[in-house]
Length: 397
Image 1 (tube, rainbow, N blue to C red):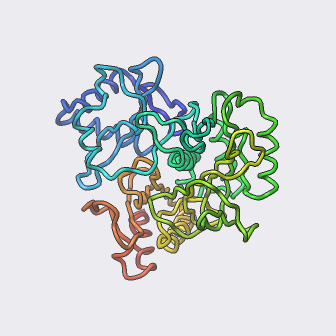
Image 2: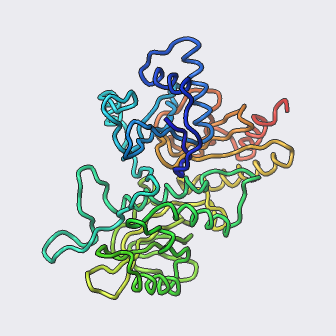
Image 3: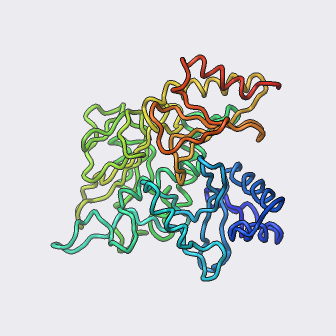
């Protein structure tokens, strides 16, 4: 068993004692001090935003995340969606109870995608009379391609750290896109073709033509359909058009718009578009599918779940900067993949104080009944909310 970053990079292997503790936790045979020790160790790994990768197979790494039940406060291990199955007999394999729990949960619109495996974002062309050419060949349990595009965008957001804010980690827009491009280098479009080789981080006619020229000259796709990606912060996606600050007319796309959380939200949006010829033999490249995630501003690509979050979220960012000036470092993280409650924001300070907040008027999923969870809607004003958060982290400092 290994600890890995969400980018796929290995942190370290577990010691035999840690692995024994983890097996006992997974099989529910621990009690007393040993159970407390296991929970403390798992909370430390979870707090570092890391995952576990199982060594039970030689050909693949099944990945597990450490989840927290917000209602009960208990930790449990969950196999990541679409991760390879464990070897037969592995103590961390999926069981019938876990399958039943998953069937009762709200289906998440996207799943974490492992690096270094071909993305298969779009299928190869099919003979006339068969299924739509914009759809990949279907395999049992395979997600639809436009949903996979959203999975990729959310994976890149999480792996590049855009869902984390702290004053000492602050980057300008150029730095944020550089992080995204760096992560894209770990994700091949097809075998041995990194997505970063055919990625433009500007959606306008000039960069579309540049990408088209590169794709037309490419030989690395062999018999696969040529395709690239366009990533940019846009104003809105309206109908079948992507509207940017540089083009009021917008750019047409022919496929689907997949948006985070199932609800449309006002811009700005971080948008990822798939770019390819619609038919075999065509030299006309166009946008096929588009996935988008709302962000705080054009300069700050922190993900926003609903438009109503923007004002209090900007206030939290300002407050975190103010507390940093007073010597109190607070880190804010938003889970974008694998969490049961997407509206949750987790604020931590030096590992000893944790505050979960929701900025929505109406809750999504069950609310934990704990002292370290607060809902912005329960405060009389933004100022009283700010004072509460500041007091929570600065009290007795």
